[in-house]
Length: 108
Image (cartoon, rainbow, N blue to C red; front, side):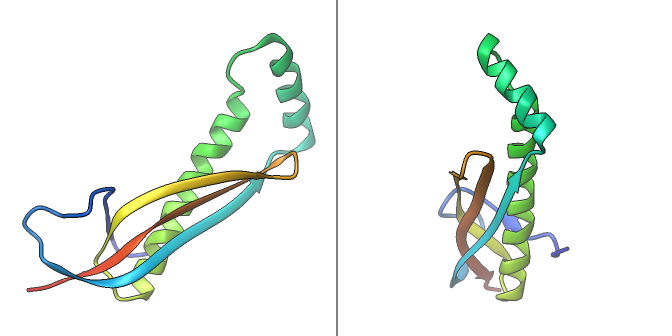
């Protein structure tokens, strides 16, 4: 796992000067098993949160951030600024999540 790389959604980091390295991203695509899909279908009928899918999306976001940190470290970065998430469905049962931002290197 990457060293502790600071990740922020802001453009500036108070008290830090840095140079831009470039864009980095972390991507994951996951799906639920058949039993979870059946449970989600039943929950869709009665309404309410589909916990299995909420958990999957939370796990996907965490994995995407972990991969974003790895990419920033490989690029020689100390932090990622302007981090954002994007997600989308692939087919009917897969979810893709990407975390992206700009890797930066702190100046002395």
